[in-house]
Length: 293
Image: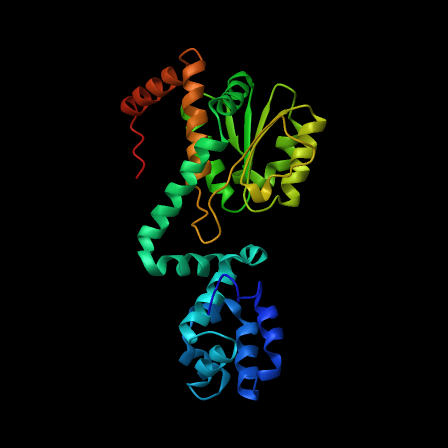
């Protein structure tokens, strides 16, 4: 089958085009595939036939009736639709299956590494040193820094908070103190900095935190991926960057790299504050008997 010219844009179009030729067994197979398209894109024809309760060869006959040479080619079509399906990637299960599909040819570890490298290389074209400096200057000048992220972003906010504290800054990981959120936000002032981390979507709680920060005139910095790029009201400084294409790992490597660059640049412009704090912390650790495993 000529994939460029003859394959319809969607699975629904494909079924509609050949509906007059489909048998009862075909209908049972299609029902199984439609009910769970993620699983269907990963299984072979024999497995799909078994779940549909039809003869093992039925999946092959269905594929040929739909215009494919055999079931492997039909399965490749299903996988391509999954990878290009857009909305399906709001499902974490669909994103994982898409990564497994991409990993089949080059190996799992290799596909993850390749995806991370591609995403990091894209950062060079979308984030500039001036963007990094716009964050680090405001962190340097803030009285206090509050960091907040939900879901996977909470792990990043915790790590960045730790690095800022070690660099001598009064930083608080709000994600670890949600029960004190009203008190922390109530104490915000125009001298403070709020750093938000958002991936895939902006949670209503993040939007409300941003709204309160705007009312209290605190400087707001936001680091998001492209899916969560819309923040209202608009933050004072915003870096939005892709964490990878559909089927790639969508990990924290890209935003963590940006955060690392911000902290490194901060050390370059804060008149030795970060360096002194790191030295003092090292001495403090050596002098005390605090042994934490």
